[in-house]
Length: 332
Ligand SMILES: NC(=O)c1ccc[n+]([C@@H]2O[C@H](COP(=O)([O-])OP(=O)(O)OC[C@H]3O[C@@H](n4cnc5c(N)ncnc54)[C@H](O)[C@@H]3O)[C@@H](O)[C@H]2O)c1
Image (cartoon, rainbow, N blue to C red; front, top):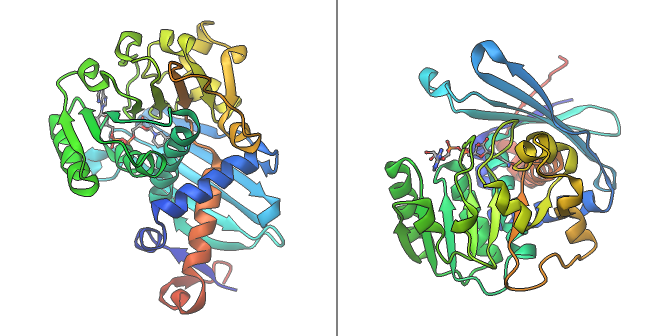
């Protein structure tokens, strides 16, 4: 039997943000319904090489989908001409354990991370949003903005701050061209966040960079950047004042935006308003007024990767599309 090799170009061709949004929303819904087997991410730390590897398995019985993602973070990789983050996904047939496909997981990761921010915006932000701020204008910002416009298509103004002005301007150009909105490259985080209804944070900061005084009443914040021990982007006072929605307690307390305040005792489980999955599955009303501040703390769930990768697998292996794919007899 053959195993499909699904390259980044195949994934990119098969996956739109609209589909990824829908599939990822279902992933959170299934997780909220308790229909997903998913142990927390496990980490290997390559201390000698300033990098780590995360292993992320999951199984969704109701769609008979199983798999595992292996994803690294090596911030010094630019020295050897490799990306910081590279992910591979292995899809497994739960009936037999046979490896159905090996797939590029990097694009899947970026897309499902953007989709998660968009879904959180859909459920947590005010209905009427006009301005969005982007703190960090790298790879994740591109998918965050795509999913945000699915959730709140009437946003008319975007403000961007990145420590790299080159990144800020490149992202500003992309936003202007693709979404035809007013775009400002701000000279500070305070200026970017002023009056913003949605704040998307996608930096690799290890100290708070968005302060409570930067956040307008009613704002929704997607805290995407912190996904490892010691990383944080928000002043803990924001978390205290906000309704905080996480993707998973074990992962968020270990490595999400809340990990540093949890370890210092400033924040604990009773300060969490809900998980995103249960918010969707139980139709919870987290936001009570247009003055509430809401925060989504994203660490990234294995089931987001699995459901997105499964969707890609189904798309590229149907009909004659599969003829262009490479295959390998892995046990040959
Ligand atoms: N939550 C998740 O599921 C998830 C998924 C993927 C990546 N991430 C995390 O998101 C972060 C961003 O990932 P990426 O792929 O976009 O990386 P990237 O390197 O492409 O972009 C990060 C951007 O942040 C900017 N930046 C760094 N520090 C800053 C600061 N103090 N103030 C303003 N800008 C700053 C950088 O200049 C860069 O443009 C990383 O920390 C990554 O680990 C989280």
